[in-house]
Length: 359
Ligand code: NAD
Image (tube, rainbow, N blue to C red):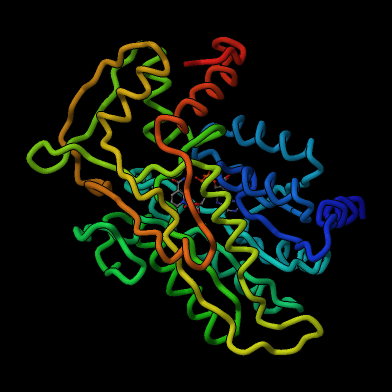
C-alpha cells in the first residue's frame, strides 16, 4: 500500500493538460535528465530502473537521490518483470511511456551479447505488451540510436536512409526495436515515436563513453586511446548536448498522439514516427581531446590506435530537418560549450575543486 501511495503521489500532475509519464531507465543518464525536466514543468513522473552494474552503480544511486529530492519515485526493478510492470499500470493510468532503459555501449556486446537481447529486445516486448493491454493505452516514445545507420557512408543520415548494415549487436538490437515497435503500432494501434540519439554527452553522463573516460584519464595523468579509422582518418561524432536531447524528448512526448482521444474516441490510426536527434555538426575525436585539454588545463597523453573491428563506426552526422519541422527541435549547444558544463560538473562531483568555475 505504501508503495502504491508513493507511486500515485509521484505520478500526480501539477499543470493543466499535463501528462503522467512512466520513465524507464530513470536512474540512467538521459532518463534522469528527462524525468527532472518533466517534473519541473508539472508533469507526473514515475521511474523504473534495475540499477545494473554496467557502469558505476553509485552514479545511478546519486542520480536517484537527485530525482527523489524532486519528488520523483524510482521503482527498483527490471522491465522484463511483467508482473511488476502490470502492477505499475494497475496503479497509475500513465498517459505516456518514455522508454530509455537499455543495455547501451557497443564494445560490451563482445563479451555480454545476451544482456542486449535481455534489455533491448525481451524487455522492450514485455513493456509493449503492458502498454498494449493498458486502458487507456499510453503513447510510447523510446530511444533508438544513430547506430542503426551502421556502415552507411552517405552523410548526413536521414531517417529514410538505409539501416541494414548494423556494425554491432547493440545497433542490431536497436534496429530490431524499431521493427518490433512498428509491429505493435500497426497491429495494436500503439502510438510510437522512436528517437535516434546521436552521441549524447553532458553533466551526469555515462562513464563508459569516451568524453567521460578521457576526462578521468587526463586528470589522472594516464594515457588515452584515440582510435583512428581507415588510412588513419580521424573518427568523428555528431556530439549532442543532453539539454538539447531533453528538449527533443519532451517535444516528442508533447506531439505524440494518443491512439484514443479524450473520451475514448478514436482519432484515426495511431502514429508511428522516427526522428534523428543530433547536433548536425560532427567533431573529430582529436578535436574533442583538445577541447577537454583546454577546459581541464591539463595536457593529454594520446595513444593513437587503429580502430578494432568491434562495433564502432567511422563517423556520424544527423540530418535533423524532420525533427525540426515536426517537434520544433533545434539544438543550441556546441561541443565546446557543452563540454565546459560537463567538466564543471565532473570536477565538482568528483571533488576536484568543489564547483569553482572552470574556464
Ligand atoms: P544509461 O545506461 O545511462 O541508462 C539506461 C538505464 O537503464 C540505466 O540506468 C540502466 O540501469 C537501466 N536499465 C538497463 N536495462 C534495464 C532493464 N532491463 N530494466 C530496467 N532498467 C534497465 O544510458 P543512456 O545514455 O541514458 O541511454 C538512454 C537510452 O538512449 C538507451 O536506450 C540508449 O541505448 C539510448 N541511446 C543513448 C545514446 C547516448 O549517447 N547516451 C545514444 C544513442 C542511444
